[in-house]
Every structure is written in C-alpha cells, then in structure tokens.
Amino acid sequence: MDERGFELWGLPWCEQVTFEQLSANIHPADRDRVRAAFNATRSVAGSYEIDFRILVGDEVRWISARGRGADAGIVDGVMFGIFLDVTGRKQAEEGSELLAGEMSHRVKNLLSIAAGLTQLTGRSASSVMEMTGDLTGRLTALGRAHDVVRPLPGEQGKAALLGDLLSVLLAPYDETAAFSGRIRVAVPRMGIGEQTASALAMVIHELATNSVKYGALSRPEGFLEVSSRVEGDRIDLIWAETGGPPIVGHPELTGFGSRLIARTVSSQLGGELTYDWQESGLVVTLALRQDRMAA
Image (cartoon, helix red, strand yellow):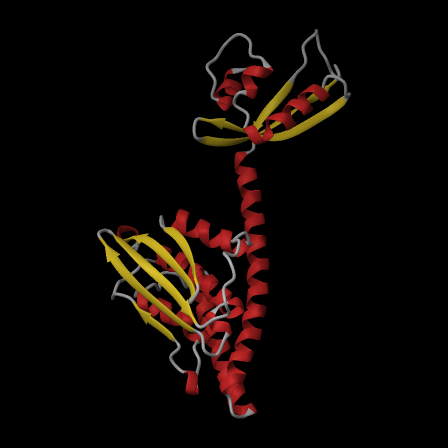
C-alpha cells in the first residue's frame, strides 16, 4: 500500500502488509464477509467491489475496496486495486434511511392519533356540531404541537419555558366537558434552548402517541401527570399514567418509535430514559442534566 493507504487504515508504514494484518482492523461484523470476498477474487475473473467498516481506535470508517480478480489486468506480476474512504457517503445513506423510517413512522402515528382523537371527542360531545368544533380544535392543536416537534425552516429559535412546551404538546389529548383536566403538568419554571426543545418535543410526542393508542389516554377514565424532581445538577421529568388498560408483563420496546426516542434522549439530550411498568400504569422517568437544558 502507499502512504495514503496506511493512513486510511490507521497502520504504521511498512514494506509489506498482509490481509491478516488488515483484517485485524476490519469491523468484527464485516470480517467474515470481507474474508470470503477476498478469497473469491482469486478465482472469479473481472471487476470486484465491496464496502465494509474498519475500526481506527474508537472511530468507524467505511472503505470501498475495488480491483480485478483472477489475474485480470495483471501487469508484470503485480495486481492493482484501490481503497476509497466512503465514510461520508455511508453516513449520508444511513441518515436518509433514518429519515425515511421516521417519516413513515410519523405518518402512521398521525393517522392513529386522528382516529384516537375522534373517539376521544365523541365521548364528550352532545351534538355533531359540538363534536366538529372540538375535533377541529384538537387537530389544530395537534398541528401546533407538530410544529414544535419538527419546526419549519425559519421557525426555529422559539423555545421558551419547559411548562409551556409540555402544555402545547399535550393540549390535543386533554378531555373537555365532564372529563376536563385529566392531564396535569407540574414542572419548575425553567427556560430551555432550541435544541433541547426540539429533542424533548419529539420524546413527549412519542409518549403521548403511545398513550392515546395503548395507554391511559385511550380510556375515558385515564389520567396523565407530568411532574419533576431536581437532584443536584440533574432534573427528572416523570411521566405517570393511571387508569389505562391493564398492563400484562413488560412490553418489549423494539419498535422504531422506541428506538428513536431512546437515541434522541442519549445523543441529543445527554440523558437517560427508564420505564417502570406498574400495575397502576406506565411510569417513564427522563433524567436530564440541567446544564444541557439551555442548549
């Protein structure tokens, strides 16, 4: 390899390098696949190309290896190939796949929410006209909440108080008339930054969606309280549901939405999310660092 090749692989320069030396840096999940492809180049004629990951310290790099197999194009007993650093392209592809998955997930959630809000509104409305007005108001509030979750270009930077953010996000799901006030928000008066507001809005929106589909907000007698406690430099937001359908066992949180908010909490908020499936209802604790709230 030339000097650029050794730099790409994170290896000190030497006169000769073997596949075994390189394979020590290949990501364990890709190593067998790359080894099989390397062996195949000795017997399969023509061009080959394979993309795989390597580990350089704690950094993950994507490499595209390209060449010609079975002595095709050999010159003076030397065969040539090339390693390309395609990390940027792979990260862009992963970002596009994540965005497509998130968009699909949110469209399905919005349809489920619309159905849930229609049932919720019908329980308290005494006439078609009243139901139409209440449902229109809820869907409008849902639109405002969605703007908080995914602000349009030029609409960023409007983050304000934590309590105001939670109230806007949860307003579409509150009951009216006899069931009014089944959602209670009790948090300290605290300003939050734009990044925190967007990430936190996504988490609350996902929890509310699951609650109106499966939890306390799916039942007329269900109740939701969002409270907080401060311990040192940490603030815990506590999402507590009661009066919902009976909880049988601990549901597996393997869906896209669950993975999305777990990643959001850890990477964007620097926090931790824990679930407690109590008999009375789900309790979710979101532990956040106060010094990150202004970001």
